[in-house]
Amino acid sequence: AQSVTQPDIHITVSEGASLELRCNYSYGATPYLFWYVQSPGQGLQLLLKYFSGDTLVQGIKGFEAEFKRSQSSFNLRKPSVHWSDAAEYFCAVAANNNDMRFGAGTRLTVKP
Amino acid sequence: GAGVSQSPSNKVTEKGKDVELRCDPISGHTALYWYRQSLGQGLEFLIYFQGNSAPDKSGLPSDRFSAERTGGSVSTLTIQRTQQEDSAVYLCASSLGRDHEQYFGPGTRLTVT
Image (cartoon, rainbow over all chains, first blue to last red; front, side, top):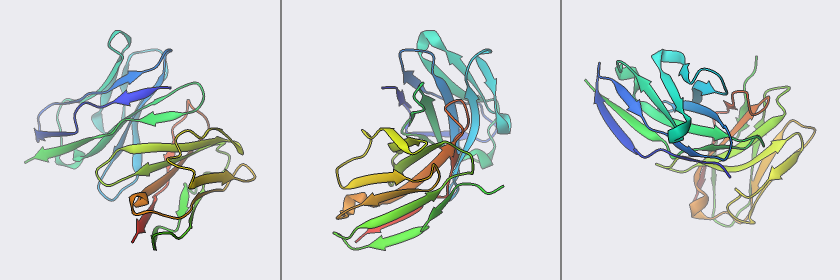
């Protein structure tokens, strides 16, 4: 079965600094990849997704992610972090059986 | 349109009691998912339905957990003889399929005392 690893449990960055959240997946074929964000007290919201085609995917709120097959990675990036980006971020992978698996999440703290 | 709804929003129960959690997916969504999110933990996949059938039940943590979906719509997650370690937020999501976004409900916060 597919699986996802988010190596960083907690990351702190200063407001205005760049951000990269790591995600590695395990799956035998090309997966469908997703990044979700969960703000405090809120539900999960989709930031972006990759199915095929261009490996650099643009999402909402200025986020992007790059699919690298050779590294089995789908890291999330943002050039300049805003205080409102503080949240929990989840990477997810879906296989061809509709089964989606989530990583453990990375909690982002933004310093003023 | 209406999103995914879950009820109750909060449930406090005594250890050993049975609980039922309900999920109303978005109309027309054939795929429905249940997850558990424990305090400080990520999302733990429990089970998903494609229509009324559940191809993969391996995520259910024990035989005290069961789920059903009727009419390709509403789903109920049942936990029998609840234990304190069952305390968590139970999230439901639905989608049109694997190449579509999963839409999440607000969750049911279960507290077992």
